[in-house]
Length: 314
Length: 324
Image (cartoon, helix red, strand yellow):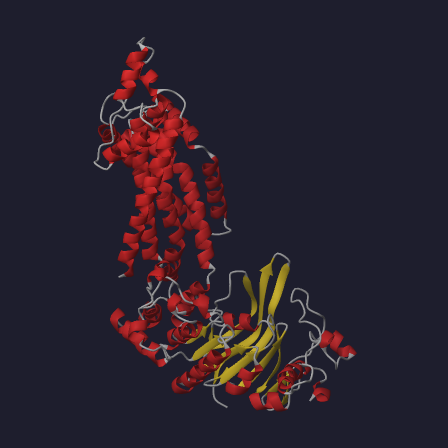
């Protein structure tokens, strides 16, 4: 009962956050050096009058806050504007690219969490043994390897020498294997370390001793009493990390020349394509807020203590 | 005297630490009879909790059982396997811990945590187990047990959490209930209620209570027999009246002296001079000799054994005749 109000409140808090981010974002783009009109003309020789005309046509002659409100009034109507470079609607550009990025994120997240949680549980349960030592060392190595370098090595081995998987462009779902791996590896090591630390801590808790004193078997102690408590921080990280994964996708998509949103963002920043960059960052902001809120909700479901503020006592 | 329920024979337990082996229980032998209340008293760190945890084999991973036997109804608890042990824990031997605040799982409802015990040990449905749990919660004095069983531990007070622990550990009417300082973490008024509850349940179910405490007030109130531990050793065992009226070990005498002194105002509190020895490197001979006022050269050389000075009264002291 308290849970629903809690969820609603968390989502409402997200709205001003999104507004705040749009203001900061718009201002940063505005203060960036470079003139989009010159980029647009790309060295074409035109009269200053023509430049002024273009500037007026794109609304760039207005003060920054006017430009912001103009943009915002379109956003709330679902219009993300038009790319200054390709003249295509931003919403269309993003909707073409977003599925690739979301698929990549989904695959790499599933990969990193299934590997990380499993490895973390094994090392926690086999603490102090050879398996623990070996897996932990592999984890540290994985964690230290930058994703882009690992991506290059994957390209070299699977794409160039073995010729098993494509190294560049999108030719079908198998094109996502190497990028997903290079995104998943470093984060799986992080997930493993967190899972291990949490599990080791929970196994030392008094309530685990209570569960054993009750005569429960080992599996039940582990699954019903330890796992749920240990997984709470891991779940939090799962949701908080989603936006970072988009950041990682920018690098990896560029490296593998995937037609995703990350690569679009990279290209648009280089071209100073205001409308596209703003559109993408807005999407990222919304995704971030949504994932954070989802994280709060899932944690509230897992941990009854979080709901206390709602008077969840009775 | 009734039948023997539990017998501990020459038990040695140490904790492995970075500085060496801490011999927390060093050669303890002890007998507990059916449906009695046996109190184990001693200062913090004397090994009484370690001894208690060793009975259902719930010692932390760094503890090593070096040698000894624990017989429960003729079955050696230290020799049976984990599966057999699981059938005994919670059903035959139950345990209540010192800190109720951390002993309940924060993410499960009270009713669920209690119901797990009958659901594990009896062939009953989950619904029946839950009903048993609610009934037991009512029995230990939780108001509105039906409603409260759907609460999470964080809304319970310390006293209610300890009542929940007691409900959980008594649903199967165990033969032996080990209570490891069950009232230490609670305030004084609640302490008395919890002790009263334990005493009532003991009488109703006819269970045997092994109560670990460092509070002689509790000992006087509820115990039948008392064992005094010092530095990993049992130094005196006797019936409760005998302990108070005729303590034979200088350490027991000192402990009782501390309590009695509280009743006289304006005088300085009695104390036992010095501190308990390190169990990493305990003193030679009698471990109490550095703090004892009866020390003789023999105490430094030779370790005293538990001997029966009169019926049911055991003492480990070379000079008990001078002490008593």
